Length: 112
Length: 144
Image 1: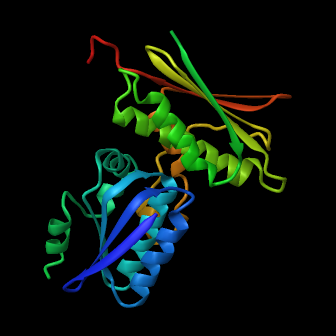
Image 2: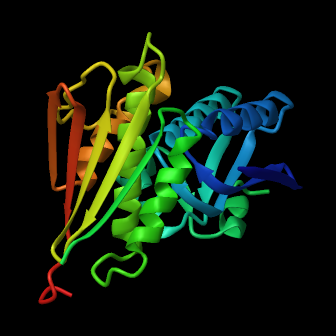
Image 3: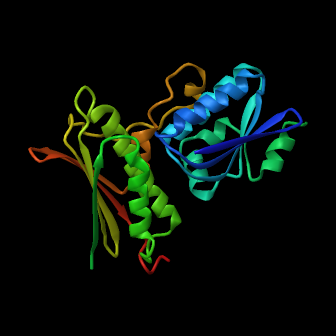
């Protein structure tokens, strides 16, 4: 799992590459938690290069979503591939988080 | 016509991507298996193996996991064998993701995904180990 981050105004775009599974979920959780811990509470999770997410990956997203909202921010999903999008829907995640087709739309949604 | 593949790996998280790679490689040229079905197969195997690693081999020396994949024209039959504590799965209710956002633990998706993505889930325990059978039916030619 490779994770990069870039700042766009007040929003951190966190791009993940590879698979978010039981092997990599802790790394994702630690990375996102560290971001939120430094005050970056508006996060866009760019999933355009994530080819696989399992329940462990979803738990990492859920943990970061919860943490960002506790800080008054939010975590929004962008550019999920079709397989990943399907499990976001199947698990009910799309009813509790905002999910955008592109990173630009997700960043713009924060109004910054 | 059946196309059978088998792989044995240690019951550790590092084996998860290796099993996924086997599924990708085995299914790549099967005409009835598209990318979405491949994702479903990989997801079910990942969730089952994660449970075996976390619970099946809990409190004992980690053993092995054997994944067998049989590609048939109308279905894919996967069996996952382990030698840890038996754990017979049953279909769980849909996890309440919104509750997880507040104060509930955020687990419960693994088995849910297995039952959502597979058409049949079977389990038996014998002296030869615990065997989980996962069957995914393929869309027939007429439906395509």
